[in-house]
Length: 166
Image 1 (cartoon, rainbow, N blue to C red):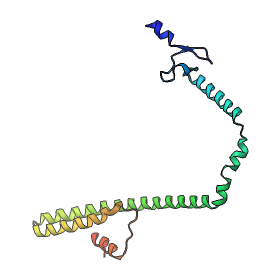
Image 2 (cartoon, rainbow, N blue to C red; image 1 turned 180 degrees about the horizontal axis):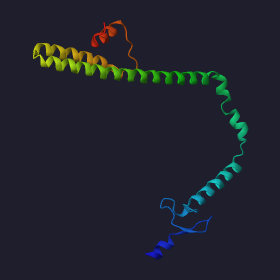
Image 3 (tube, rainbow, N blue to C red; image 1 turned 60 degrees about the vertical axis):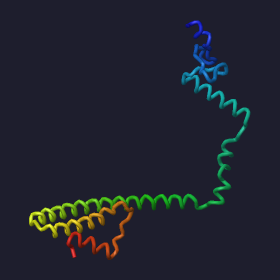
Image 4 (cartoon, rainbow, N blue to C red; image 1 turned 45 degrees about the horizontal axis):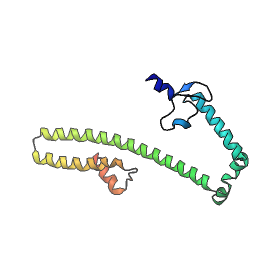
């Protein structure tokens, strides 16, 4: 078994250590899998590529996007402005979300106290009406999943009636 294993091993061209070639590469693999050898192989391959493909990187890098930049002179200004606007909107949305969460908790506590007081009076019709009002107002406040919740006149009145703040 060991004799068969040593026959399939190869000697690394760079470090001269024995290694087991990858099954898919087999005879073509000349360099072992060690990190040092692979880094050196990549450097040598890059130098070889540069010899075969002479490129002046400074001029190439400078000229690369010049034509596009001439056709789109205001791109970066618009990009930055758009990004800043998006960040402001997210901050506003988070602030309004926190405010709505706090309002919802206050509302739930107040309505819970009202319902417990109503239940103690043992008037079932009144309790049903209060529960319906509670669910209507709860869903109004639960609409916090929206990015913005513009409070126009009707919604302000509904919210004021939730808290009895006319």
